[in-house]
Image 1 (spheres, rainbow, N blue to C red):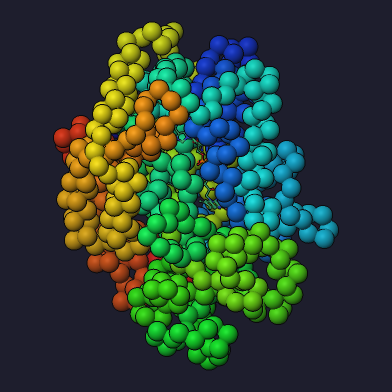
Image 2 (image 1 turned 60 degrees about the vertical axis):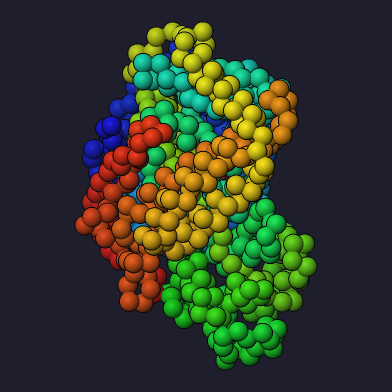
Length: 637
Ligand SMILES: Cc1cc2nc3c(=O)[nH]c(=O)nc-3n(C[C@H](O)[C@H](O)[C@H](O)COP(=O)(O)OP(=O)(O)OC[C@H]3O[C@@H](n4cnc5c(N)ncnc54)[C@H](O)[C@@H]3O)c2cc1C
């Protein structure tokens, strides 16, 4: 397998412009002769499908929800970054680029990140033109707030519902194309395989989730924008439906998987409350603008927070990282919370919590202002915990939130399978080993609105694409495999539910491939996960049939993929003998407990190639070169 990143030559700041000029174009009259499949209608897929439709391509767009409006992107709360510098506080494209590379602990490609920072400003213009109701300052300019890992305010927001508002913008653009006939929308349809003809992606096989019908669709190019795989941990802040199936099945057809172990643990989530919980809830990072994080200095201090005087509190982020304080990046803030709880200073049931306290902010700006800024988040917190965060500090704890790993893509967002492009959280691209807050929405929309419309044209204009349709034997073969797999799942009739397997896998992943990883724990997982997988295929019980709406069957297929993919994550985590960003190998840390990178041996993207069910995958390495920023030890002190 060859990993050609296709980074354009020339100075960093000119690469994208030069590349845009040098790429081939498809003339307007020819665009309608090409068909493109977009799997996913979240911010990345919705933006791509709408833009490609507007350009004149024939687009088919697929999602498993009943409407594109329900993609997981709708959950995004805090905001979206852009280097507009409306605040005049020292921001620039260069600074956003630098913060993002540093935030990712120097494990992302410079050229991609620079392009992302450049495009960030266009995204805001586009969304405002669509009517996205971003918050505004008294003078009418868009307002900004701060997010972790930055000392400037560059995060644009719509209260705590930024993802929802951005998605409504992308959705209305998509609906316009659906009405115009350039996009055909297939909701409640799950992609279960990518079809390759002569080594090139030429279509997909899907299951209609309402009728169970298995069907094929052919096209000239395929785009996956299918989101992240945080649910491999069972408990995460992701929507329950988020899964790895689309990207994992593409991996099994030959697409390399980049840095699968790079997972983001978000520091501010509502703590786990019991064994039967199925989901965790994020409290947006934006809350760290005004909330102060602390624990009692004394161990096992059971006093209510109001009775603990200032002198007996440890505002540990402010103490350890004075220049970034409560706005330290997520990986660092999460580890610091874990450290405090491991030291016995945690609060709440089981001692697995820290306080996020708004008392000072309420004193400073008043309750009304705090309500305006974060009202919906406070309400959500109160509904879940029955505690009023205006009166008593929130209790928070880290939880799985985002996956930086994903299918490996080149600068054009094409995977190692020609014709298969990957956008948004589904690719590995821009965030290295740790994503900064408010950068996922930026990346998804950059990919969908501004990168793929150029690069797919270049691909279509350069590739030789013989005409074909779904009568090609490759489609029949893939359909037969899917049908057989579905029947096998339904035929096991074992004794355990799909969820019980998922929960057990999630615990193994959290314990041994979560916030802290050791070679020993990862090796344990590499033994236990295959055993759990074998048991799944012998003892799972999937009720119902394949010819109807059957959510157990949907889940079973996804969990079967997680049971293979979890092993790949552990392999990747074991192979990377360093700590970087969200990947913390306990064996590799500085004397004061910070991540210890090993640039000499591990300054690369690990891209895994599938070799078959009975063989270990092979890792390929794309070296990362830093010509514009210095590889340095990350410091937020
Ligand atoms: C609670 C929460 C809050 C967040 N807040 C922020 C924030 O404030 N700022 C920020 O930048 N980021 C935030 N993020 C991260 C961000 O929301 C996501 O990374 C981003 O929205 C992902 O967008 P996407 O388009 O790549 O994928 P998604 O929005 O997850 O969309 C995936 C799409 O793919 C479809 N799909 C998946 N698999 C299949 C399949 N097999 N067949 C057919 N369709 C399929 C789904 O139906 C869906 O349409 C937050 C994340 C969470 C969990």
